Length: 440
Ligand code: NAD
Image 1 (spheres, rainbow, N blue to C red):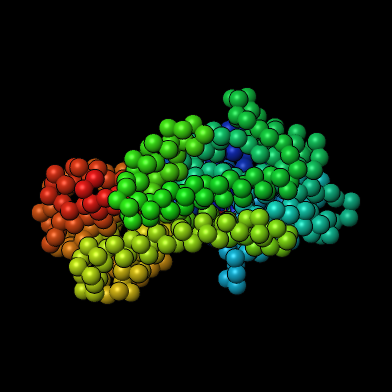
Image 2: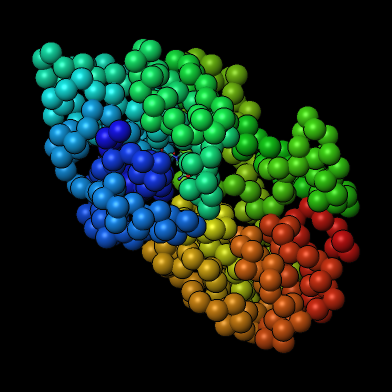
C-alpha cells in the first residue's frame, strides 16, 4: 500500500520505517529540513536501537522516501498517518494541537482523491471529531476525507519492536471502509495474532490517555510508598517485589525512584486533566493532579537527600551525575527528571558534571551550565557524591572499586534503585537509595 507519515520525530520516523519494512511504499513528511535530509540519507536523526538498520534497508530498497512537501504527500497517497507533536501548551495544562491542525489545514485543500487521514499522535478525547469537521470544511468539492485515530503505544528504546509487535492495535474509525483499510495496513501483525480492537475514535483516543494515566499512577503509587518507607524504615524494593507477586498488581512499573518524565506521560496526564475540566468531569480524574505532584516531589526529594549526604549544603560540592535522558536507551531529554535534578543542584551552587551514553548533545542544548563528559571516570573525578539518575545498563556494569579510587568521597545516591547496593558497599561506597533503609 502507498501511505504517508506526516511528522517524522520519535514516533513518526519509526512508524514510517516500520511500515516500509512490512512492505508498504512510504513517504515521510516533516517541516524540519535537517531531519528530512538525514532520514532521506538513511540516517536516524535521534538514537533509537534498531532504527538505523531498518532505515538503511528500506531507503535502499526504495520503499521509504522523505520530503518536506505536503503537496507531494497529497499526490503520493490517499492514506496519511499524522504523527506530529502535541506538547503541553505554554499557557496551561492542555495539549497544544496547533501542529496537528496545521497538518490537516495544509493537507485537506490539496487532496484530489477520497482519503483517509489517520492520527497516531496522542490527543485529547474529541479531537478526531473536531478535526473531521475541519477537514470537511477544507477539502475540494466532491472529495471526501475520513479522519480516524490509531493511537500509538510505543516506548522509546523499544520503539521498533513495539511498532512491529505491539501489545495491541487500537483502531478508532467511523466507517467499515476505514477499518478495512487499517486492517490491510497492519495485515502482517494481524496474521501474527496481535490483538486488534476496532472502536469509535473517541474511545481510541481515550485508550491512549487512560493507559498513560494508569502507568503514571502506578509509578507515583510506588513512589508514594517509597516516601512512607523512608519515614518508617521499611524497604520499598522488597515491598514492590512482594506486591508484584500478586497477579492482579504485577511487578512492572513498580520501580520506585526519581519518577517519570519525557515527552509523553507528564504532558498527557495534564492534557487529560484539562480536557476532563472542559467535559465537566474534572472531579472524576482530579487524582491525576496528585499523581503529577507526587512525581514532581521525587525530584525535590532526590536533591534534598543529595544535600544531606554531602553534609547539609550543596554549595561548592562536586556532584557527578550519571544519566541525563528521561529513560535509558533513548537520547530524549524532554522533561527529563535527571536534568531537572541537575538544574536544581546547579541552582544550589553545586559543581556538577554529567555523563550520559547517548543524550549529551540534547542535554547540552536543553541545560547549559554543568560540565558534560563522555567518560564516567572523568565525570566522577574528585566527586563528593555520585548521583545515579537514569538507569542505563552501562552504569550497572561499572566497577565500584575502580570508581572509588577517583572520587573524593565514595558516596552514591541511587535515585533509580537500579544498582546493586551490596556490590557498591563491598567496593567501599556509602550507598543510599530512595525508599530504602541505609543498611539495605
Ligand atoms: P517529536 O517532537 O519527536 O516529533 C514531532 C515531529 O513533527 C517533529 O519532527 C516536527 O518537526 C514535526 N512537525 C511539527 N509540525 C509539523 C507539520 N506541520 N508538518 C510536518 N511535520 C511537523 O514528537 P514525538 O515524540 O514523535 O511525538 C509525536 C506524537 O506522538 C505526540 O503526540 C506524542 O505524545 C505521541 N507519542 C509519542 C511517543 C514517544 O515515545 N515519543 C509514543 C507514543 C505516542
